Image (cartoon, rainbow, N blue to C red; front, side):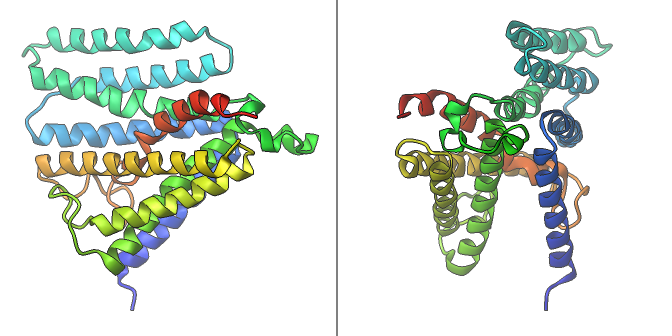
Length: 295
């Protein structure tokens, strides 16, 4: 019989998947709002973990800076703001965070600064690449879809499809790792997360590469099976890095989960850890690699 915990995990997972599909399908601005909300909640959980270690991060300043970065990224991707303005948010926010800590009654420490700046990078700069990815509009990134009917072409953009493919690759990595690990897992992958196995990681890699190969062929990439498989392998690698990074932080803070927002899944950060490093990898792989191998 399926345990109550497993039922909650399944239901939460289905709702999270449905939510992700909806926000990608609804388009750029709804997607940007959803990313902003998720980042805000996840950053609160990250700072909660930091406080368990006695760290006093610049919580409000960092939360505000992350939202400014996401908004400016979205506006610049749509041509409303110059790209240089979005680029300037990163160093200016770093200075603002340090300034806030500097003028507190108890001056901030190295760990306070490090946690705040890393939080801004981890849950601001990295997720902003989802917005960059979603806003890709050049058909050279998906030449196989150039002949779509106008009604579909006006609704479906290259960025939307590549974003969806990236999400499916991460899902494939999670599912493959889970089922291969449970069926064949014998060798621990890392002491940071004893439940993860080498066999599970290999299974996740194979599943992710399969989704990448299918995506590459659908998108009409030259040598689509090769480029898609390579992209899938990168996604699998960095999904594991994201997962283990969050596990390392939880272990250091002495916590089992980052929060309890999602029954059966823990916190928001527990659910999105594989989605943090991957968008930057996919974005830069697509914009640099696809033009090199185009027909």
